[in-house]
Length: 177
Image (cartoon, rainbow, N blue to C red; front, side):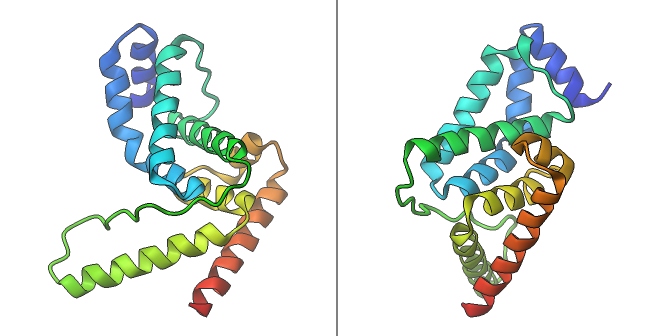
C-alpha cells in the first residue's frame, strides 16, 4: 500500500494529522497549478483551501481512480474553472510571481531567473484556457494525457493537440519577447 493510500485510509478513519500531511505534501504543486490557471494568487489560494476543505468534509466518499496527486490536481483545475466561470471572463491579472526555489549566490542570476519566470507566466496567460489547463496539468500536475482526457471528458487526441498547439504558441510568444 502506497503512502498516499495509507494517508487516505487514515483520513477516512478521522485522522486529521493525515489531512495535514497530505496538505503539506501537495500544497506547493497544487498552488502552482491554480496560479497558472487563474493568474491570480489570492484566488488560487482560495481554490487550494476549497479543495482541502472538501477533501476533509468528504473523506469517506472520495474515490480515487489513479493517484491522489492526480485527483487533487483535477480538483484544483475544477475549482479554478468554476472561479473563472463566475468571474465571467473578467480580466484577471497576475498578482505575484513566485520566487525561484533555492538560494542564488549571485543577485544577477536571481534577477535573470525571475525575469524568465515572469516572461513564461505572462506567455502562459496569453494561451486559451483549454491549452493552458492541459499544459499546467501535464507539467505541474504530473498528470498523463490519458488522465487529463478522462478529467476533461475529451479524447486523448484532443488533449495531445491542445498540448502541442499550446507549446507551439508559447514558443512563438516567447520568441517575440
